[in-house]
Structure formats: structure tokens, C-alpha cells
Length: 187
Ligand SMILES: Cc1cc2nc3c(=O)[nH]c(=O)nc-3n(C[C@H](O)[C@H](O)[C@H](O)COP(=O)(O)O)c2cc1C
Image (cartoon, rainbow, N blue to C red; front, side):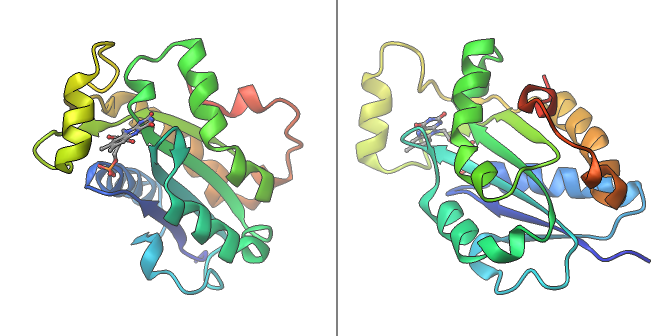
């Protein structure tokens, strides 16, 4: 039996965690053993061969705790098969421009270890949960960018998990030479 796959998630609310749990369910049904943990509770990556890092975005960057987690475990991550996803409001519209922007959010992780897949997912914004200052900023936004709603596309997330699962479960996939990052992005 193979080693477990870790899905390390980081969010301020629950939308990224729920995506992590959904992906875990799909990879488990493929025969994988999957652990889902918040980045704050992970001390070591020693027991895993493969790690998915999933993070929300703020200020058009991955959350600080995601970047700190990746830097803290950079040496270990370089030994693993990795895949990354971002949950963000940018991807509420799945356009080439937004995909390029969201791919940019994941670059600090890609620089540590080239992944076998990148997931770019729409997120969820609930005014009732965010602080009053952010709420005021979001309500002032006339562009519609920070509009409230749940923009997660579960069919897209499922398709990504189905694509990424075998790459994480079969170490031979990691030997493939990845020449074009765009091929890794699930559209
Ligand atoms: C205060 C705040 C700031 C945000 N800033 C950005 C941003 O700069 N770019 C972006 O694409 N999404 C941004 N988002 C959207 C979040 O990434 C999205 O809501 C995500 O689903 C949150 O994940 P979580 O529920 O796991 O915390 C922001 C959300 C909040 C609440």
C-alpha cells in the first residue's frame, strides 16, 4: 500500500477546506489514502510521497500562511510529487486573462517545486463573514469584482481531481518532463 497523500489547505473561512475535502473524497475513491490538514497543523511532510497545497488568495497573493508553510517545508517539498490549487474571486470568471492572473498567484509555490498540476478555482465570498472594513470596501466596489456569492465550480474541481489523482498515485507520472506549464492548468 502506498504512502498517504497530503492535502494541505489554507483559508480564512471554509471554501478552500471544502474543496480540499471534496478532492480528497475523489482521490480516496481512486484507491489513495488521503489526509486533509490545515497548513497550521502540519509539522512534517516525512510520511507523504505527494502533497497538494490549496490556498485562498488575498490582495492578489496566496495567503501569508500558505507561503510561510511552503518556505518552512521547501526542502521536503522538493522531494515530493506536488500539485497546487488556488481558490479566488479572480476565477469567478474563467477567462484566459483570469487564468493567467491566478496562475501568477501560484508562482511562489512553483518556484519551490514544479507541480504535476495546477488548479485555478473560483471561490466564495460571504459579506456576513468578513470584517466590517473589508465589507465596506467590497460594497464600495462598483466593478462587480468583489460581488458576494459562491463561485466554486464543482464539476471543474471534480475534473481536476480525476486528472491529478493518477499523477499523484503513480510516481512514474512525476518522471514526465514538464515542458509547458499551460498543459498543467485544467481549463
Ligand atoms: C478580504 C478578502 C480579500 C480578498 N482578496 C482577493 C484578491 O485579492 N484576489 C482574489 O482573487 N480573491 C480575493 N478574495 C477572494 C477569496 O480568495 C475567496 O473568497 C476564497 O474563496 C476564500 O477562501 P476561504 O473561504 O477558504 O477563506 C478575497 C476575499 C476576502 C474575504
